[in-house]
Image 1 (cartoon, rainbow, N blue to C red):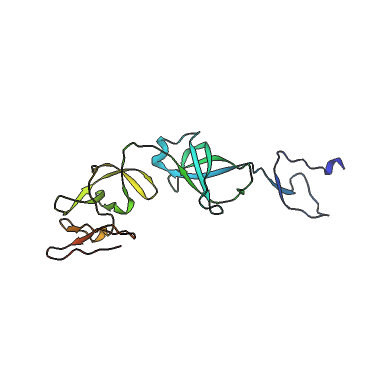
Image 2 (image 1 turned 135 degrees about the vertical axis):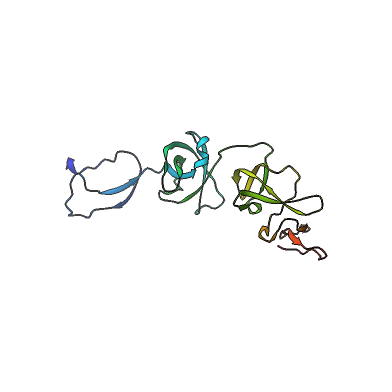
Length: 213
């Protein structure tokens, strides 16, 4: 009878039984799944450019579909020393405390990781950034509301916005929507703000400006 007593190597929650009464088992047979759920391991990846700031101890925020609007904080405990050769991304692991057991092993999560902080950064919508064979650029309005092609360099990204580290100055006006319809020298009609939002659209000489949402 002493040989039939099974002791788990750690405290946790017992799941489904993997054997039935009468089954033959040996030392290698899985009998039952047990999960330690008081804290969970979150595995995620980040772009190669984040390697310069990736470090053990970085705070992370996880969000899961089961609890919309809620944040679950954690801390990175492993940064992979190599990149995934297929994705060119680095794998990180973080511990997420789960004292009330609301999070379940196997959940998918969205992860926020602060890779840097900038004071007085110039942020623009990602939709305003256009790419050609020379790199990223935006359509900036000059003093006469004419569109001009301005190359830029980008930095951090967050919440649909991107940092511009070179090419723009505070107060510059740029085209944030309909950028594929703009050409160098187009006169742009600046649409008045509305509750639904409006876009900057090209206006040809002699034609009244239109509005778009």
